Figure 1 (cartoon, rainbow, N blue to C red):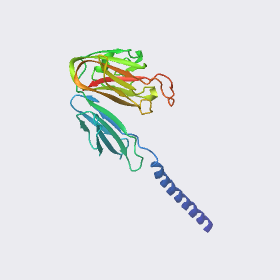
Figure 2: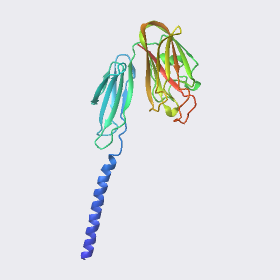
Figure 3: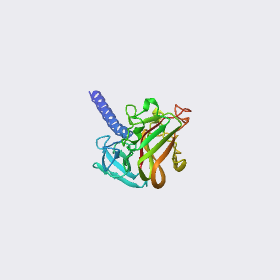
Figure 4: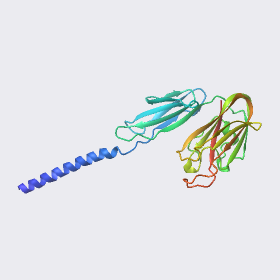
Length: 271
């Protein structure tokens, strides 16, 4: 009888220890997992007066943090805990991430938001060569219709897609505008062979007013929207030529290495 009772005691002690170990292991394993990134949504990424931005939690109990960066000066507002929708009235790059006591901190996500300073809808635009027939958007006017595309480009008519090394855009501004910045809004999705702009050159009557070289164009990066800016002398302009250079040879780390990259653009902004 004592042997039977002792056997039961040993079995109970073993199961108890096993459950305790499994419980500790479960908590430990949980901390090995990384939180999903939060979702940033807004009424409009290109707005006229102001826009509301919302950050959505990836998991119950997660704490959301954000950093707002002035798009021109790159001066950051330090990390702030997100509690309610954010009202934006100027160009801003907003970055957000999530923390949780039982999980690893999420990756940071970002969104660029722009205030429309000048509408180009009445301007004349010509593009050479034309976009690939598979990605013609709404024609040349796609770039001046005051509407930005999203990262879901396949079923969108807000993108022009090019598989050419150089694209030339001629703009006739109506009316002439006092400006000192040209911005090209683009898509990066390297899984779809869509790479960043490699170079921008802005000209007036064949004279170079400003240029930008992207030394990171061939580096690996996450899918995102990205706007590239070129500064030009502050003046009134009625005609401008914008020359865009794409990544001509996809780098070795990519499965499409050695081939022409795609370039996707959805909007030209000036201010």
